[in-house]
Image (tube, rainbow, N blue to C red; front, side, top):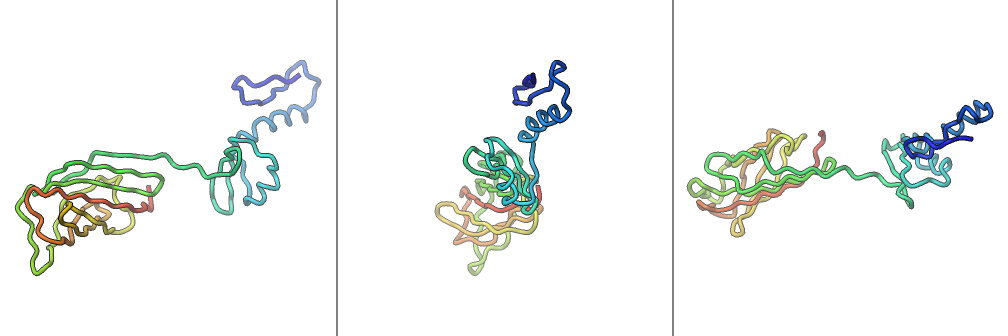
Length: 196
């Protein structure tokens, strides 16, 4: 009589006292192991035709869409990637100091949020324009990977736009008015990284 495996995975192991049967031993092993591995299917349709009664925890790879899916007991779902967070590595440019930095990433979606204080002199507009001004550099793991991206900043009184390049350099581009010494500026940006 077969016996359960020592890992509690419902794999039945053929015993020496069992009647000889290569077919039976192979089937017991396959029936126990295959449902616990990542099974490959050409499509969800092929999977549905093959796995008519899937069990919770089964994992499949769909070749047509290159996607891993797990059966959660009622539906096939794509598992969510882990959330990654960071709070260090931001460097302020001359004339600014860091209040805080927060980075959040799940899969390729990345969100950064940081506060800076203007420690240098007032930043004034010339004919309504703000001369491009580097304010900080974002750590490597929190930078865009494909192009320069635009975002928004605000101080609660003033607001404007900024850009961040693949080099992580954050540049103020616009402001609704003078940015006075001691002003706290908050920067927010969400983007998709094209590579990890």
